[in-house]
Amino acid sequence: MLRWALIFLLISLAAAFFGFGGITVFAVHLAQVLFYIFLAGFAVMLAAGLLFG
Image (cartoon, rainbow, N blue to C red; front, top):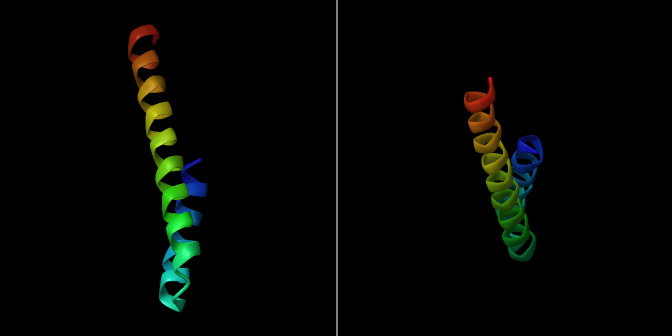
């Protein structure tokens, strides 16, 4: 999941460099959503590991 967030971040940076505004906004938002999903999953797994491990 984090890999996909980084890939979309790189796509957005490349699109911003070449001047494609719409693709950049879409890729940045998608990267942010994927990052927050990854972060939430990490927090849940960390809490589960501390409680049950």
